[in-house]
Image (cartoon, rainbow over all chains, first blue to last red; front, side, top):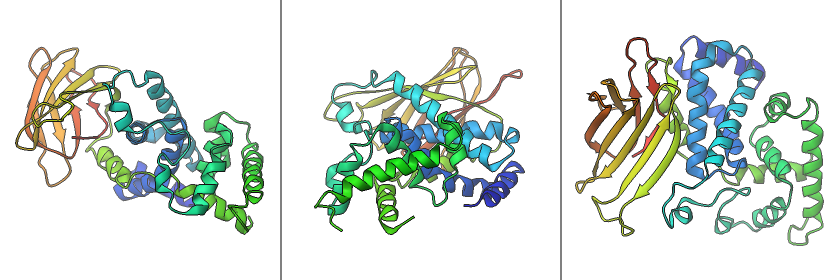
Amino acid sequence: MSDVRLGTLLERARDGDRDSLHELVRELNPVLWRVARGQGLTAEDAADVVQTSWLELLRRLHEIRTPRAVTAWLITATRREAWHRQQRGRRDLPDGAIALDGLADPGPPPDQRLLTDERDRVLWSHFARLSQRCRELLGIVAQVARPDYSAIAEAYGMPHGSIGPTRGRCLAKLREMLLSDPAWGA
Amino acid sequence: MDPVDAEILQRIARFDPPPADLDERVLFAIDLGSLEAEVAHLAEETLAGSGARAAGERTRTITFDADSRSVMITVVERPDNLVRIDGWLAPGAALQVDLRQPEPAPLRTVTADATGRFVFDEVPHGLAQLLVHGDNGDARVVTPSLVL
C-alpha cells in the first residue's frame, strides 16, 4: 500500500470513518503479528498484544500525523508490549499448560508437520539458523509488498538507511545456504 | 528482486500466518462507541480446574491492569455450555461495567458493588470485551477482547 493511500486512510480514520480504520487494521495486522511473534510470544499472547496496540493507537490517533508515523508507532507499541509480556513469563500457567499453549516462537512455524511442502521444509531448516535479527527482519519485509524501511528502522532502533542493506545481507545469506543445499534444488 | 529472492520471501510470508480471526478480534475490540478509554493490559492469566476438564469445574482467571484501575475476572464454565464471569475492580468502586459481545448479542450492563465486585451470568462463549465506566472524571477503562 502506498504512503498516499495509508495517509488517506489515517486521515479518514481520525475523522471517525470506521471503514478506513478497518482497512488500516487489515493492512497492518500481518506486520504487527510478525513483530509480536518475533519477540517469542505464543500465538494467543501475540494476538492479544496486537489488539492492545490498536486500542492504544485509538487514544492517540489525533497525535499521529503521517502514514510513516502510524506504522512506526504501531510497530514500536507492539514490540514494547510484547517485551513486557515476555518478561512476565509463563509463571502463571499450571502444569502442562505450556505444552497446550504452544511453545514460544523461535521463528515460524511452530509445527514442522504443517510443512507439507518439501521446499518449505528445506527453507525453514535454513531460516531457523539465521540470526534473530535476520529472522525478524525477513519475516516482516516478507509480509509487505513495499516495506516502509524507515518506519521499521525507527521502531527497531536501527539507523535509517540500514534496513535495506541488512535485509539484503540476510536474504543473501539465506539464499547462499539454500542454493548449496541439494534438497532445495534449482 | 530476482525470482529466487521473490520465492524465498513468498514462502517466508506463509510461515506462521496470523490466525484467521486476528482481524475480527481487533476490529471488534476497537469498535467501541468512543475512543476515549484507558487501555487495560492483560497482566496475568491462570487456568485452574480438573485436568479432565470436567464441565463446571474449569475456571480461568484473568487480570487486566490499567493506570487507574485493575480488572480481575474469573470465567467459570457452566454445565449448560454458558459461562459466568465473576469480576472484581481494584480499587473497588460501585461503577457501571459493560460486557460487549459481537452483534447481535445485546450489551450487558451491571453495576459493581462498593467493594468492586460484579457478576455476569449465563454468558455465551465467544468474543467479549469489558468496559468499566468512570466516575467523577475518572477515565473509562477498556480491556482487549478475549475469547470466552
